[in-house]
Length: 221
Picture: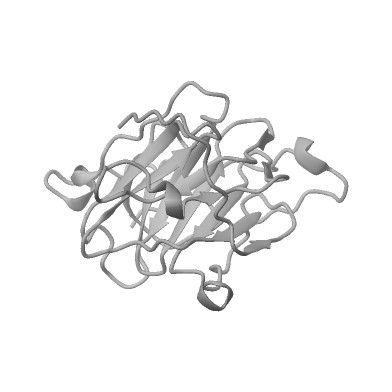
């Protein structure tokens, strides 16, 4: 899905959590800053293919533009715990300040800008580093972020419905859609399962049933 918006995103960040820049659990040396590169390769599960007619077949293709932010991709969705994970899939650090994450507006079918979470200034991701957006509302400071070696976590007003499904948008500062992921109804309805990209962090990967790994490489069930 490609949707152009030519309006300025309203800032909706109400509360934020941030930890030391981390890459799949590895912490760079102090002072490395945005130029730090992650050590080690991203883990993947080889030979995992969704069965015909299975839940993974309902996934919509990832829609990425050729903008400079396309190396940052939506990577995992937890409907049960209402969080969304993004990862820097590239080989260089990238500044995603001003980019945003939104759910679907039921009236327009596009991003619901009123509830979008805008990443604040200084949100710089090293390669294989993660941003988590924790949904579930902003009351009392918002729902606690999931435990994991993510680099940044921000609270969102919107939630994610496992029963009804959801569409998640990653937006550029000008409102343009950088990427979308469709979470089908009941895609990950069992226990702590999530809906993640395999191979993890690969823009060409497909979404299947995965273990819950916020801030780390996805593992297919």
